[in-house]
Length: 229
Image: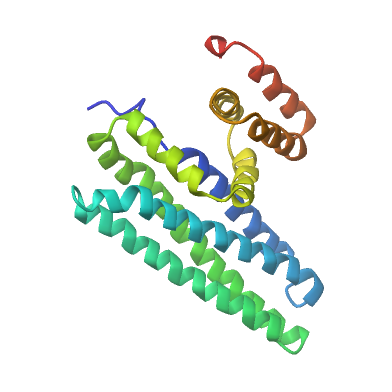
C-alpha cells in the first residue's frame, strides 16, 4: 500500500508542540534559575507546556486510540501506556516547579532549577520519540483502517472539542512551527470551512509571530488561486 500521500493528522500540531518544547528548553538554559523573578517566567512556561501536552494526549486517546481498541487493541494500548508515562514525567516537572517556588534562597533554587532542567530534558526526549512513533507506527494503522476523509473528520471533531482559548495557544505554536506551504494551506482551509472570525484570529497571530517578510510571503500565497499553489 502506497502511503506517501496519505493524510497525516498529527503533522501540524506535533510541529507546534515540538516548537514549544525547543523554545522552553532554550528558555530554561538561558534563565538564571537561582533568580526568583527571572525564574518565575520560565516556570510559567513549563506549566503551560504541560497543560498543552496533557490535553493533547487526552484528545489523542479519546479520538484515535480508544476507537482502535476494538480493531487494534495492542496498538491502542501501547500508545495509551506511553501517554501514561508522559503524564508521569509531567507530574515530576509539576512537583519540581512547586518545590522551586518554595525554596528559601538562591542556592536552593539553583539546585532545584538544575534538577528541573534535567527533568525537562527527559520530558523532551520522551515526547520527541513518542511523536515520531505516532506519525510512523500509529499512522500506519490508521491509514490501513480508515480513509483520509474519515481521519480528517475525526481530526475536526477533536479540534472542535478544544476550548477556543486553548486552541489559540496551540495555534500560536503551530504558526511558529510549520513551513510556509503548510501555513498557506491551513489558512485556505480555514477561509473555506471555518467561521470568518477564526481566520481573522489566525491572521492576527501570524502578523504578531512572523517576521514581516515571511508574513508578506504567506499572505501573497494565501491570495493566489488554490490551484496555483
